[in-house]
Image 1 (cartoon, rainbow over the protein chains, first blue to last red):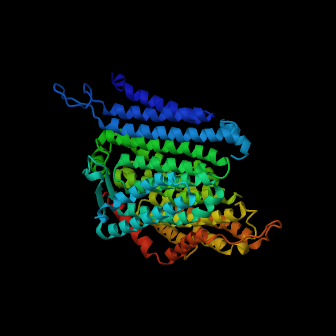
Image 2: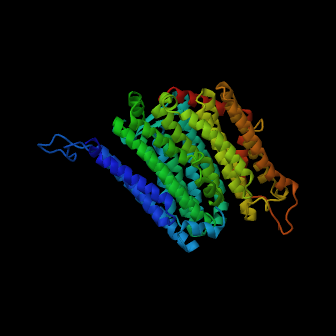
Image 3: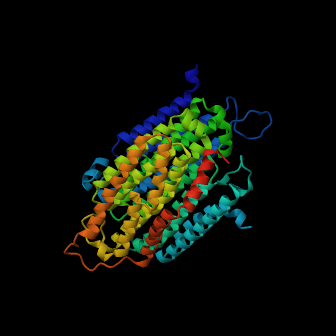
Length: 117
Length: 493
Protein backbone atom coordinates (compact mmCIF):
# COMPACT_ATOMS: atom_id res chain seq x y z
CA UNK A 1 0.00 0.00 0.00
CA UNK A 2 2.79 2.33 0.94
CA UNK A 3 4.44 1.77 -2.43
CA UNK A 4 1.21 2.17 -4.42
CA UNK A 5 0.33 5.27 -2.40
CA UNK A 6 3.43 6.95 -3.75
CA UNK A 7 2.63 5.93 -7.30
CA UNK A 8 3.06 9.42 -8.74
CA UNK A 9 6.42 9.88 -7.07
CA UNK A 10 7.68 6.61 -8.51
CA UNK A 11 6.60 7.66 -11.98
CA UNK A 12 8.27 11.06 -11.55
CA UNK A 13 11.53 9.45 -10.41
CA UNK A 14 11.43 6.89 -13.25
CA UNK A 15 10.87 9.66 -15.81
CA UNK A 16 13.72 11.72 -14.34
CA UNK A 17 16.11 8.80 -14.63
CA UNK A 18 14.92 8.03 -18.17
CA UNK A 19 15.40 11.64 -19.23
CA UNK A 20 18.85 11.94 -17.70
CA UNK A 21 19.88 8.62 -19.24
CA UNK A 22 18.80 9.83 -22.69
CA UNK A 23 20.77 13.05 -22.28
CA UNK A 24 23.91 11.16 -21.35
CA UNK A 25 23.66 8.07 -23.56
CA UNK A 26 22.39 9.46 -26.88
CA UNK A 27 24.71 11.11 -29.35
CA UNK A 28 22.00 12.69 -31.48
CA UNK A 29 21.44 16.26 -30.32
CA UNK A 30 17.67 16.14 -30.87
CA UNK A 31 17.44 12.97 -28.79
CA UNK A 32 19.49 14.64 -26.08
CA UNK A 33 17.00 17.50 -26.11
CA UNK A 34 14.04 15.11 -25.91
CA UNK A 35 15.70 13.52 -22.89
CA UNK A 36 16.16 16.94 -21.31
CA UNK A 37 12.47 17.70 -21.89
CA UNK A 38 11.40 14.42 -20.27
CA UNK A 39 13.66 15.22 -17.31
CA UNK A 40 12.11 18.67 -16.89
CA UNK A 41 8.57 17.37 -17.29
CA UNK A 42 9.20 14.79 -14.58
CA UNK A 43 10.02 17.65 -12.22
CA UNK A 44 6.72 19.33 -13.14
CA UNK A 45 4.93 16.10 -12.24
CA UNK A 46 6.75 16.07 -8.90
CA UNK A 47 5.54 19.61 -8.10
CA UNK A 48 1.96 18.88 -9.11
CA UNK A 49 1.95 15.67 -7.06
CA UNK A 50 3.13 17.58 -4.02
CA UNK A 51 0.21 20.00 -4.31
CA UNK A 52 -2.53 17.33 -4.41
CA UNK A 53 -4.65 17.02 -1.29
CA UNK A 54 -6.54 13.70 -1.13
CA UNK A 55 -10.18 14.41 -1.92
CA UNK A 56 -9.49 18.09 -2.55
CA UNK A 57 -10.81 19.98 -5.56
CA UNK A 58 -9.40 22.85 -7.58
CA UNK A 59 -9.06 26.00 -5.50
CA UNK A 60 -12.27 27.71 -6.59
CA UNK A 61 -14.68 28.99 -3.94
CA UNK A 62 -17.97 27.17 -4.31
CA UNK A 63 -20.65 26.10 -1.92
CA UNK A 64 -20.37 22.54 -0.75
CA UNK A 65 -16.61 22.26 -1.19
CA UNK A 66 -14.30 22.86 1.74
CA UNK A 67 -11.21 20.88 0.83
CA UNK A 68 -8.93 22.34 -1.84
CA UNK A 69 -5.67 21.24 -3.41
CA UNK A 70 -2.82 23.72 -3.13
CA UNK A 71 -2.92 25.89 -6.27
CA UNK A 72 0.49 27.49 -5.79
CA UNK A 73 2.64 24.67 -7.29
CA UNK A 74 0.48 24.78 -10.43
CA UNK A 75 1.29 28.47 -10.77
CA UNK A 76 4.98 27.80 -10.20
CA UNK A 77 4.94 25.07 -12.80
CA UNK A 78 3.29 27.38 -15.33
CA UNK A 79 6.39 29.55 -14.94
CA UNK A 80 8.67 26.52 -15.13
CA UNK A 81 6.90 25.36 -18.31
CA UNK A 82 7.61 28.73 -19.89
CA UNK A 83 11.24 28.34 -18.91
CA UNK A 84 11.36 24.82 -20.36
CA UNK A 85 9.77 25.97 -23.61
CA UNK A 86 12.28 28.81 -23.92
CA UNK A 87 15.14 26.41 -23.24
CA UNK A 88 13.85 24.08 -25.92
CA UNK A 89 13.51 26.99 -28.36
CA UNK A 90 17.08 28.15 -27.78
CA UNK A 91 18.37 24.58 -28.00
CA UNK A 92 16.51 23.93 -31.28
CA UNK A 93 17.82 27.18 -32.73
CA UNK A 94 21.36 26.14 -31.85
CA UNK A 95 20.78 22.66 -33.33
CA UNK A 96 19.58 24.20 -36.61
CA UNK A 97 22.73 26.33 -36.75
CA UNK A 98 24.88 23.29 -35.92
CA UNK A 99 23.25 21.36 -38.77
CA UNK A 100 24.04 24.23 -41.15
CA UNK A 101 27.62 24.60 -39.96
CA UNK A 102 28.57 20.93 -39.60
CA UNK A 103 26.06 19.08 -41.79
CA UNK A 104 25.36 16.67 -38.95
CA UNK A 105 23.75 16.64 -35.51
CA UNK A 106 25.58 13.58 -34.20
CA UNK A 107 27.84 14.35 -31.25
CA UNK A 108 30.66 12.05 -32.42
CA UNK A 109 30.72 13.44 -35.96
CA UNK A 110 30.82 17.02 -34.68
CA UNK A 111 33.81 16.22 -32.49
CA UNK A 112 35.53 14.34 -35.29
CA UNK A 113 35.11 17.28 -37.68
CA UNK A 114 36.69 19.75 -35.29
CA UNK A 115 39.46 17.44 -34.22
CA UNK A 116 39.37 18.59 -30.63
CA UNK A 117 37.65 17.07 -27.63
CA UNK B 1 11.06 58.24 -3.43
CA UNK B 2 13.24 56.66 -6.08
CA UNK B 3 15.77 55.57 -3.46
CA UNK B 4 13.12 53.43 -1.76
CA UNK B 5 12.61 51.48 -4.97
CA UNK B 6 16.29 50.93 -5.75
CA UNK B 7 16.11 47.13 -5.28
CA UNK B 8 13.36 46.87 -7.90
CA UNK B 9 14.89 49.39 -10.30
CA UNK B 10 18.20 47.53 -10.14
CA UNK B 11 16.52 44.67 -12.02
CA UNK B 12 13.77 46.44 -13.91
CA UNK B 13 15.95 48.94 -15.76
CA UNK B 14 18.25 46.39 -17.46
CA UNK B 15 15.30 44.04 -18.04
CA UNK B 16 13.26 46.71 -19.86
CA UNK B 17 16.24 47.97 -21.82
CA UNK B 18 16.90 44.50 -23.23
CA UNK B 19 13.92 44.39 -25.64
CA UNK B 20 14.56 48.07 -26.45
CA UNK B 21 17.99 47.05 -27.74
CA UNK B 22 16.39 44.40 -29.93
CA UNK B 23 14.28 46.93 -31.81
CA UNK B 24 17.10 49.43 -32.29
CA UNK B 25 18.38 48.91 -35.83
CA UNK B 26 21.87 50.28 -35.23
CA UNK B 27 24.57 48.41 -33.32
CA UNK B 28 26.15 51.66 -32.22
CA UNK B 29 23.00 53.06 -30.57
CA UNK B 30 22.26 49.68 -28.95
CA UNK B 31 25.80 49.77 -27.56
CA UNK B 32 25.27 53.28 -26.17
CA UNK B 33 22.05 52.19 -24.47
CA UNK B 34 23.61 49.01 -23.05
CA UNK B 35 26.60 50.94 -21.74
CA UNK B 36 24.41 53.62 -20.18
CA UNK B 37 22.22 50.99 -18.49
CA UNK B 38 25.27 49.08 -17.23
CA UNK B 39 26.71 52.19 -15.60
CA UNK B 40 23.33 53.09 -14.08
CA UNK B 41 23.13 49.54 -12.72
CA UNK B 42 26.62 49.93 -11.24
CA UNK B 43 25.67 53.24 -9.60
CA UNK B 44 22.57 51.66 -8.09
CA UNK B 45 24.50 48.61 -6.89
CA UNK B 46 27.09 50.87 -5.25
CA UNK B 47 24.33 52.89 -3.58
CA UNK B 48 22.74 49.68 -2.30
CA UNK B 49 26.06 48.39 -0.97
CA UNK B 50 26.68 51.70 0.86
CA UNK B 51 23.14 51.65 2.27
CA UNK B 52 23.36 48.02 3.41
CA UNK B 53 26.82 48.42 4.92
CA UNK B 54 25.65 51.42 6.91
CA UNK B 55 22.13 50.41 7.94
CA UNK B 56 21.95 46.62 7.66
CA UNK B 57 19.92 44.42 5.30
CA UNK B 58 17.15 45.89 3.21
CA UNK B 59 13.79 44.29 2.47
CA UNK B 60 11.61 45.17 -0.47
CA UNK B 61 8.18 43.76 -1.19
CA UNK B 62 7.75 43.45 -4.95
CA UNK B 63 4.56 45.22 -6.06
CA UNK B 64 3.65 46.01 -2.45
CA UNK B 65 2.74 42.38 -1.63
CA UNK B 66 4.05 41.53 1.83
CA UNK B 67 6.61 38.77 2.28
CA UNK B 68 5.11 35.27 2.50
CA UNK B 69 2.58 35.97 -0.29
CA UNK B 70 4.48 38.32 -2.53
CA UNK B 71 8.04 37.98 -3.82
CA UNK B 72 10.45 39.55 -1.36
CA UNK B 73 13.70 41.14 -2.43
CA UNK B 74 16.27 40.94 0.30
CA UNK B 75 19.53 42.87 -0.06
CA UNK B 76 22.08 41.74 2.49
CA UNK B 77 25.79 42.48 2.45
CA UNK B 78 26.69 39.38 0.50
CA UNK B 79 24.02 40.14 -2.09
CA UNK B 80 25.11 43.76 -2.37
CA UNK B 81 28.74 42.69 -2.78
CA UNK B 82 27.82 40.38 -5.66
CA UNK B 83 25.61 43.10 -7.15
CA UNK B 84 28.63 45.42 -7.25
CA UNK B 85 30.86 42.70 -8.73
CA UNK B 86 28.38 41.79 -11.49
CA UNK B 87 27.36 45.36 -12.33
CA UNK B 88 30.97 46.58 -12.15
CA UNK B 89 32.27 43.87 -14.50
CA UNK B 90 29.30 44.53 -16.79
CA UNK B 91 29.91 48.27 -16.90
CA UNK B 92 33.64 47.89 -17.62
CA UNK B 93 33.35 45.09 -20.15
CA UNK B 94 30.56 46.94 -21.94
CA UNK B 95 33.08 49.64 -22.93
CA UNK B 96 35.19 47.03 -24.66
CA UNK B 97 32.17 45.55 -26.47
CA UNK B 98 32.06 48.32 -29.06
CA UNK B 99 35.19 47.55 -31.07
CA UNK B 100 35.35 43.86 -30.35
CA UNK B 101 31.73 43.11 -31.26
CA UNK B 102 31.93 45.25 -34.38
CA UNK B 103 34.84 43.09 -35.53
CA UNK B 104 33.52 39.68 -34.53
CA UNK B 105 29.84 40.02 -35.50
CA UNK B 106 27.80 41.07 -38.51
CA UNK B 107 25.90 44.36 -38.17
CA UNK B 108 22.42 42.84 -38.01
CA UNK B 109 23.37 40.67 -35.05
CA UNK B 110 24.86 43.43 -32.92
CA UNK B 111 21.63 44.84 -31.41
CA UNK B 112 20.56 41.27 -30.58
CA UNK B 113 23.90 40.68 -28.90
CA UNK B 114 23.28 43.66 -26.61
CA UNK B 115 19.78 42.34 -25.88
CA UNK B 116 21.21 39.01 -24.76
CA UNK B 117 23.89 40.78 -22.74
CA UNK B 118 21.35 42.95 -20.87
CA UNK B 119 19.16 39.90 -20.18
CA UNK B 120 22.14 38.03 -18.76
CA UNK B 121 23.01 41.07 -16.65
CA UNK B 122 19.50 41.47 -15.24
CA UNK B 123 19.25 37.75 -14.51
CA UNK B 124 22.50 37.73 -12.58
CA UNK B 125 21.60 40.89 -10.67
CA UNK B 126 18.24 39.30 -9.87
CA UNK B 127 19.86 36.21 -8.37
CA UNK B 128 21.90 38.41 -6.07
CA UNK B 129 18.95 40.44 -4.86
CA UNK B 130 16.02 38.04 -4.52
CA UNK B 131 14.82 36.62 -1.23
CA UNK B 132 12.53 34.04 -2.79
CA UNK B 133 13.78 30.57 -3.70
CA UNK B 134 11.61 30.08 -6.79
CA UNK B 135 12.30 33.60 -8.02
CA UNK B 136 15.99 32.72 -7.80
CA UNK B 137 15.40 29.78 -10.16
CA UNK B 138 13.60 32.01 -12.67
CA UNK B 139 16.38 34.61 -12.63
CA UNK B 140 18.94 31.83 -12.94
CA UNK B 141 17.24 30.61 -16.11
CA UNK B 142 17.00 34.13 -17.54
CA UNK B 143 20.72 34.60 -16.99
CA UNK B 144 21.57 31.12 -18.28
CA UNK B 145 19.49 31.26 -21.46
CA UNK B 146 21.01 34.62 -22.31
CA UNK B 147 24.49 33.22 -21.62
CA UNK B 148 23.96 30.26 -23.97
CA UNK B 149 22.98 32.74 -26.67
CA UNK B 150 26.04 34.88 -25.99
CA UNK B 151 28.33 31.86 -26.24
CA UNK B 152 26.64 30.66 -29.45
CA UNK B 153 27.45 34.03 -31.09
CA UNK B 154 31.16 33.09 -31.12
CA UNK B 155 33.23 33.62 -34.25
CA UNK B 156 33.38 30.03 -35.55
CA UNK B 157 31.17 26.97 -35.57
CA UNK B 158 32.75 25.37 -32.52
CA UNK B 159 30.96 28.07 -30.51
CA UNK B 160 27.66 26.39 -31.45
CA UNK B 161 28.74 22.98 -30.19
CA UNK B 162 30.10 24.58 -27.01
CA UNK B 163 26.88 26.52 -26.47
CA UNK B 164 24.81 23.36 -26.85
CA UNK B 165 26.96 21.50 -24.35
CA UNK B 166 26.67 24.48 -21.97
CA UNK B 167 22.89 24.52 -22.47
CA UNK B 168 22.45 20.82 -21.67
CA UNK B 169 24.61 20.87 -18.55
CA UNK B 170 23.33 24.27 -17.42
CA UNK B 171 19.71 23.15 -17.74
CA UNK B 172 20.40 19.96 -15.81
CA UNK B 173 21.99 22.09 -13.08
CA UNK B 174 19.08 24.53 -12.95
CA UNK B 175 16.55 21.66 -12.94
CA UNK B 176 18.39 20.03 -10.03
CA UNK B 177 17.99 23.31 -8.15
CA UNK B 178 14.30 23.30 -9.09
CA UNK B 179 13.89 19.77 -7.69
CA UNK B 180 15.58 20.88 -4.47
CA UNK B 181 13.33 23.91 -4.15
CA UNK B 182 10.28 21.71 -4.79
CA UNK B 183 11.27 19.30 -2.02
CA UNK B 184 11.83 22.22 0.35
CA UNK B 185 8.39 23.61 -0.50
CA UNK B 186 6.88 20.20 0.06
CA UNK B 187 8.32 20.02 3.58
CA UNK B 188 7.89 23.64 4.69
CA UNK B 189 5.09 25.13 2.58
CA UNK B 190 7.04 28.28 1.86
CA UNK B 191 9.39 29.63 -0.77
CA UNK B 192 10.51 32.72 1.12
CA UNK B 193 14.13 32.27 2.18
CA UNK B 194 13.61 33.85 5.62
CA UNK B 195 10.66 31.54 6.33
CA UNK B 196 12.57 28.55 4.99
CA UNK B 197 15.45 29.36 7.31
CA UNK B 198 13.06 29.58 10.25
CA UNK B 199 11.24 26.31 9.53
CA UNK B 200 14.07 24.05 8.36
CA UNK B 201 15.96 23.50 11.66
CA UNK B 202 13.23 21.27 13.09
CA UNK B 203 13.12 19.23 9.86
CA UNK B 204 16.84 18.49 9.86
CA UNK B 205 16.34 14.74 10.13
CA UNK B 206 13.81 14.35 7.36
CA UNK B 207 14.97 12.62 4.21
CA UNK B 208 13.36 15.00 1.67
CA UNK B 209 15.20 17.95 3.22
CA UNK B 210 18.48 16.08 2.94
CA UNK B 211 17.69 15.14 -0.65
CA UNK B 212 16.81 18.78 -1.35
CA UNK B 213 20.17 19.84 0.04
CA UNK B 214 22.00 17.34 -2.15
CA UNK B 215 20.09 18.39 -5.28
CA UNK B 216 20.73 22.08 -4.67
CA UNK B 217 24.44 21.61 -3.93
CA UNK B 218 24.95 19.53 -7.08
CA UNK B 219 22.88 21.97 -9.17
CA UNK B 220 24.83 24.96 -7.88
CA UNK B 221 28.04 22.97 -8.40
CA UNK B 222 27.19 22.58 -12.08
CA UNK B 223 26.52 26.29 -12.38
CA UNK B 224 29.74 27.35 -10.68
CA UNK B 225 31.79 24.71 -12.55
CA UNK B 226 33.01 22.89 -9.47
CA UNK B 227 35.26 19.94 -10.33
CA UNK B 228 34.10 17.38 -11.60
CA UNK B 229 31.04 19.29 -12.88
CA UNK B 230 33.11 21.71 -14.93
CA UNK B 231 33.07 20.11 -18.38
CA UNK B 232 31.02 22.83 -20.05
CA UNK B 233 33.35 25.65 -19.00
CA UNK B 234 36.56 25.23 -21.07
CA UNK B 235 34.72 24.93 -24.39
CA UNK B 236 32.24 27.70 -23.61
CA UNK B 237 34.95 30.19 -22.61
CA UNK B 238 37.27 29.20 -25.45
CA UNK B 239 34.80 29.54 -28.31
CA UNK B 240 32.60 32.40 -27.07
CA UNK B 241 33.27 35.89 -28.48
CA UNK B 242 36.35 37.25 -26.67
CA UNK B 243 34.51 39.92 -24.72
CA UNK B 244 31.76 37.47 -23.75
CA UNK B 245 34.42 35.25 -22.15
CA UNK B 246 35.55 38.31 -20.21
CA UNK B 247 32.01 39.06 -19.06
CA UNK B 248 31.07 35.46 -18.17
CA UNK B 249 34.38 34.69 -16.47
CA UNK B 250 33.80 37.60 -14.11
CA UNK B 251 30.13 37.02 -13.41
CA UNK B 252 28.54 33.66 -14.29
CA UNK B 253 30.54 31.44 -11.96
CA UNK B 254 30.49 34.08 -9.22
CA UNK B 255 26.73 34.06 -9.27
CA UNK B 256 26.88 30.25 -9.06
CA UNK B 257 28.95 30.59 -5.89
CA UNK B 258 26.39 33.05 -4.55
CA UNK B 259 23.59 30.50 -5.08
CA UNK B 260 25.60 27.93 -3.16
CA UNK B 261 26.29 30.38 -0.31
CA UNK B 262 22.67 31.54 -0.21
CA UNK B 263 21.31 28.05 0.21
CA UNK B 264 24.06 26.65 2.42
CA UNK B 265 24.34 29.53 4.86
CA UNK B 266 21.08 31.44 4.61
CA UNK B 267 18.50 28.75 3.98
CA UNK B 268 19.89 25.50 5.42
CA UNK B 269 22.22 27.02 7.98
CA UNK B 270 25.76 26.16 9.01
CA UNK B 271 24.70 23.52 11.54
CA UNK B 272 22.82 21.48 8.94
CA UNK B 273 25.27 21.93 6.07
CA UNK B 274 28.49 21.29 7.96
CA UNK B 275 27.22 19.37 10.98
CA UNK B 276 24.52 17.03 9.71
CA UNK B 277 25.66 16.88 6.09
CA UNK B 278 29.35 16.41 5.17
CA UNK B 279 29.55 19.56 3.03
CA UNK B 280 32.87 20.74 4.53
CA UNK B 281 34.70 17.55 3.53
CA UNK B 282 33.11 17.54 0.06
CA UNK B 283 33.92 21.18 -0.71
CA UNK B 284 37.49 21.09 0.62
CA UNK B 285 38.18 17.80 -1.16
CA UNK B 286 36.75 18.87 -4.52
CA UNK B 287 38.26 22.35 -4.14
CA UNK B 288 41.74 20.89 -3.72
CA UNK B 289 41.33 18.55 -6.70
CA UNK B 290 39.97 21.48 -8.76
CA UNK B 291 43.05 23.58 -7.93
CA UNK B 292 45.48 20.83 -8.93
CA UNK B 293 43.53 19.63 -11.98
CA UNK B 294 42.71 23.11 -13.31
CA UNK B 295 46.23 24.45 -12.90
CA UNK B 296 47.87 21.34 -14.37
CA UNK B 297 45.51 21.33 -17.36
CA UNK B 298 46.13 25.06 -17.89
CA UNK B 299 49.87 24.46 -18.26
CA UNK B 300 49.36 22.25 -21.30
CA UNK B 301 47.08 24.56 -23.29
CA UNK B 302 48.39 26.47 -26.28
CA UNK B 303 45.16 28.36 -26.81
CA UNK B 304 45.34 31.12 -24.22
CA UNK B 305 41.58 31.40 -23.78
CA UNK B 306 41.42 27.70 -23.00
CA UNK B 307 44.36 28.14 -20.63
CA UNK B 308 42.49 30.88 -18.74
CA UNK B 309 39.34 28.74 -18.71
CA UNK B 310 41.16 25.89 -16.96
CA UNK B 311 42.73 28.43 -14.65
CA UNK B 312 39.18 29.58 -13.80
CA UNK B 313 38.34 26.04 -12.69
CA UNK B 314 41.35 26.17 -10.36
CA UNK B 315 40.44 29.62 -9.04
CA UNK B 316 36.88 28.47 -8.33
CA UNK B 317 38.57 25.69 -6.40
CA UNK B 318 40.17 28.32 -4.13
CA UNK B 319 36.80 29.99 -3.52
CA UNK B 320 35.05 26.70 -2.74
CA UNK B 321 37.97 25.58 -0.59
CA UNK B 322 37.67 28.74 1.50
CA UNK B 323 33.96 28.16 1.99
CA UNK B 324 34.49 24.48 2.79
CA UNK B 325 36.95 25.19 5.61
CA UNK B 326 33.97 26.59 7.51
CA UNK B 327 35.68 29.20 9.64
CA UNK B 328 35.59 32.97 9.50
CA UNK B 329 38.92 33.41 7.71
CA UNK B 330 38.04 30.74 5.17
CA UNK B 331 34.77 32.44 4.34
CA UNK B 332 36.52 35.82 4.11
CA UNK B 333 39.04 34.24 1.74
CA UNK B 334 36.23 32.84 -0.39
CA UNK B 335 34.33 36.13 -0.56
CA UNK B 336 37.42 38.28 -1.17
CA UNK B 337 38.50 35.89 -3.88
CA UNK B 338 35.05 36.17 -5.41
CA UNK B 339 35.77 39.86 -5.96
CA UNK B 340 39.46 39.44 -6.74
CA UNK B 341 39.03 36.64 -9.21
CA UNK B 342 36.29 38.56 -11.01
CA UNK B 343 38.68 41.51 -11.40
CA UNK B 344 41.77 39.56 -12.47
CA UNK B 345 40.11 37.01 -14.77
CA UNK B 346 38.07 39.70 -16.53
CA UNK B 347 41.26 41.72 -17.00
CA UNK B 348 43.03 38.68 -18.47
CA UNK B 349 40.21 37.88 -20.88
CA UNK B 350 39.96 41.56 -21.86
CA UNK B 351 43.68 41.55 -22.68
CA UNK B 352 43.09 38.50 -24.88
CA UNK B 353 40.10 40.24 -26.48
CA UNK B 354 42.39 43.16 -27.34
CA UNK B 355 45.00 40.74 -28.74
CA UNK B 356 42.34 38.97 -30.80
CA UNK B 357 41.08 42.33 -32.04
CA UNK B 358 44.51 43.20 -33.40
CA UNK B 359 45.96 39.90 -34.58
CA UNK B 360 42.93 37.60 -34.86
CA UNK B 361 44.36 34.74 -32.79
CA UNK B 362 45.10 33.99 -29.17
CA UNK B 363 47.46 31.03 -29.24
CA UNK B 364 50.91 30.97 -27.74
CA UNK B 365 52.68 31.03 -31.10
CA UNK B 366 50.95 34.12 -32.44
CA UNK B 367 51.56 36.33 -29.40
CA UNK B 368 55.35 36.07 -29.74
CA UNK B 369 56.98 39.46 -29.34
CA UNK B 370 53.71 41.13 -28.56
CA UNK B 371 55.11 42.72 -25.39
CA UNK B 372 56.79 45.36 -27.52
CA UNK B 373 53.95 45.88 -29.98
CA UNK B 374 51.05 46.06 -27.56
CA UNK B 375 52.86 47.18 -24.38
CA UNK B 376 49.82 48.38 -22.40
CA UNK B 377 47.71 45.32 -23.17
CA UNK B 378 50.48 42.93 -22.22
CA UNK B 379 51.31 44.98 -19.10
CA UNK B 380 47.69 44.58 -18.03
CA UNK B 381 47.97 40.85 -18.71
CA UNK B 382 51.13 40.56 -16.62
CA UNK B 383 49.65 42.44 -13.64
CA UNK B 384 46.49 40.34 -13.66
CA UNK B 385 48.58 37.20 -14.23
CA UNK B 386 50.70 38.08 -11.19
CA UNK B 387 47.46 38.34 -9.21
CA UNK B 388 46.54 34.88 -10.42
CA UNK B 389 49.81 33.55 -9.03
CA UNK B 390 49.35 35.46 -5.79
CA UNK B 391 52.40 37.70 -5.90
CA UNK B 392 52.47 40.03 -2.85
CA UNK B 393 50.99 43.51 -3.43
CA UNK B 394 48.41 42.07 -5.81
CA UNK B 395 44.89 41.00 -4.91
CA UNK B 396 45.64 37.31 -5.41
CA UNK B 397 48.02 37.44 -2.46
CA UNK B 398 45.31 38.81 -0.15
CA UNK B 399 42.88 35.96 -0.83
CA UNK B 400 45.56 33.31 -0.59
CA UNK B 401 46.81 34.83 2.67
CA UNK B 402 43.39 34.51 4.27
CA UNK B 403 43.01 31.03 2.81
CA UNK B 404 46.32 29.96 4.36
CA UNK B 405 45.32 31.53 7.71
CA UNK B 406 42.05 29.60 7.58
CA UNK B 407 43.79 26.34 6.67
CA UNK B 408 46.30 26.67 9.50
CA UNK B 409 43.51 27.59 11.90
CA UNK B 410 41.65 24.44 10.87
CA UNK B 411 44.85 22.39 11.13
CA UNK B 412 44.55 21.30 7.49
CA UNK B 413 48.16 21.15 6.35
CA UNK B 414 47.21 19.32 3.16
CA UNK B 415 45.27 22.47 2.16
CA UNK B 416 48.34 24.62 2.78
CA UNK B 417 50.43 22.37 0.55
CA UNK B 418 47.83 22.39 -2.23
CA UNK B 419 47.43 26.18 -2.15
CA UNK B 420 51.18 26.76 -2.36
CA UNK B 421 51.64 24.10 -5.04
CA UNK B 422 48.71 25.50 -7.02
CA UNK B 423 50.33 28.94 -6.95
CA UNK B 424 53.54 27.45 -8.35
CA UNK B 425 51.58 25.84 -11.18
CA UNK B 426 49.88 29.20 -11.87
CA UNK B 427 53.35 30.74 -12.00
CA UNK B 428 54.33 28.24 -14.70
CA UNK B 429 51.42 28.95 -17.03
CA UNK B 430 51.68 32.71 -16.54
CA UNK B 431 55.42 32.58 -17.24
CA UNK B 432 54.80 30.70 -20.49
CA UNK B 433 52.80 33.66 -21.74
CA UNK B 434 55.30 36.24 -20.49
CA UNK B 435 58.16 34.30 -22.06
CA UNK B 436 56.42 34.23 -25.44
CA UNK B 437 55.30 37.85 -25.34
CA UNK B 438 58.50 39.44 -24.10
CA UNK B 439 61.43 37.15 -24.77
CA UNK B 440 60.73 35.77 -28.21
CA UNK B 441 61.09 37.55 -31.53
CA UNK B 442 57.94 38.45 -33.44
CA UNK B 443 57.00 36.08 -36.24
CA UNK B 444 58.49 37.18 -39.57
CA UNK B 445 55.16 37.56 -41.31
CA UNK B 446 53.76 39.82 -38.56
CA UNK B 447 52.59 43.06 -40.08
CA UNK B 448 52.19 46.41 -38.43
CA UNK B 449 50.47 45.81 -35.09
CA UNK B 450 49.27 48.76 -33.10
CA UNK B 451 48.09 49.05 -29.51
CA UNK B 452 44.42 48.19 -28.88
CA UNK B 453 41.83 50.99 -29.10
CA UNK B 454 41.27 53.08 -25.98
CA UNK B 455 37.76 51.74 -25.32
CA UNK B 456 39.26 48.26 -24.90
CA UNK B 457 42.35 49.42 -23.07
CA UNK B 458 40.55 51.60 -20.50
CA UNK B 459 38.57 48.81 -18.77
CA UNK B 460 41.64 46.56 -18.85
CA UNK B 461 43.75 49.27 -17.20
CA UNK B 462 41.02 49.97 -14.64
CA UNK B 463 40.84 46.30 -13.65
CA UNK B 464 44.63 45.94 -13.57
CA UNK B 465 44.78 49.03 -11.35
CA UNK B 466 42.12 47.44 -9.12
CA UNK B 467 44.27 44.29 -8.91
CA UNK B 468 47.11 46.41 -7.55
CA UNK B 469 45.09 48.88 -5.46
CA UNK B 470 43.07 46.27 -3.59
CA UNK B 471 46.23 44.24 -3.13
CA UNK B 472 47.79 47.09 -1.16
CA UNK B 473 44.77 48.71 0.47
CA UNK B 474 42.77 45.69 1.63
CA UNK B 475 40.51 47.72 3.92
CA UNK B 476 37.56 48.00 1.57
CA UNK B 477 37.38 44.49 0.09
CA UNK B 478 38.33 42.56 3.23
CA UNK B 479 36.14 44.88 5.30
CA UNK B 480 33.04 44.20 3.24
CA UNK B 481 33.87 40.49 2.96
CA UNK B 482 34.33 40.24 6.73
CA UNK B 483 30.99 41.87 7.53
CA UNK B 484 29.30 39.68 4.90
CA UNK B 485 31.01 36.55 6.27
CA UNK B 486 29.95 37.39 9.84
CA UNK B 487 26.42 37.88 8.54
CA UNK B 488 26.47 34.49 6.79
CA UNK B 489 27.80 32.66 9.83
CA UNK B 490 25.22 34.39 12.00
CA UNK B 491 22.37 33.02 9.92
CA UNK B 492 19.65 34.98 8.20
CA UNK B 493 19.59 38.58 9.29
